[in-house]
Length: 446
Ligand code: SF4
Image (tube, rainbow, N blue to C red):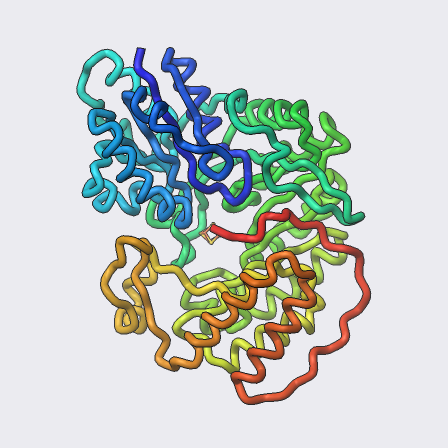
């Protein structure tokens, strides 16, 4: 029997779904599976030496960057093992992975192909060709049995300030939208896949039995299939009335499906993450976000009216940002009374240009980027105004130094620094007193 070693490097502080799901498929296929989450476990040379197949879950940029040196180490320890990369970032970085000796690259709908690969290797057959770039899978319930306990992962700080063990699942994958900066788009090309509600419920049940009192739905956009989303949350609320959850959906969907927001509140939604990205309509048009600055204000209002907590995310540093528009973004956050809703890291994020980014075809971007950097997995870009790049670096350091500080305190420090660098002096408005904002205590991002 072949031994498969599945390695996760980073899943934003969550118990890795990207190991649990393939582990179920591989075990059903009779494969001996070991899962190693490097955020919580060490990778022993012994485990590497025994494996016939070593596979990395590469769902996002940070995870892939962290995997690169591990791939090299595994190759040295066990040059005979068949190496595989799977997940969204694997096809995006297929040529780099091939250069590192990764023989099989599978996309984000990887489970069946990974099981077929392991079985073929176990039987001494050559690796089979992947069935299709984006197969329609009948998902299995993830096998979380050998993963580190939930207590070792990020927890939810709820509206009362109490800590809740948090689990994670996916009710859909991919996205039907085509925002130009999004890494999902070159792979899914406007398609998404739905996970059967019974499978989602069974995965949540396993995590609730392991102590979870909150579930993050990792769907790129929970309202891509609104009827499916509503069925899932209604069934979750019925089965687990004391379990809260959070979802992500775009501003456009918050407005188009405003009638569903009360259902979210009634079924235990602790907060909704939404990629606002910018308050600059020009930037929103370039990114093809499908919303405007005015839409954001309407979405904030719709969420407040429904009693749903909104946590916006941003890409504040782009080639189109100026010191002035950055300060205006902060002012807009304050004016909408969202200071406590924004994780400080969101105030320092710089536009990522990975392989196959839809933005690389933009003439302005093309003139600002350098050649692909294999160690950072990005096309580096430089702002025409060096002061903007300098501010981003300063803010990233500032936020990094104050990971545990209250959001308002960090926001104030960001406000002061940004306005100072822009050469303007504006006092931070005094905010209205509002209830505490629930948040997951993993301070980083993708
Ligand atoms: S809506 Fe979100 S997940 Fe979908 S393409 Fe746009 S940024 Fe990506």
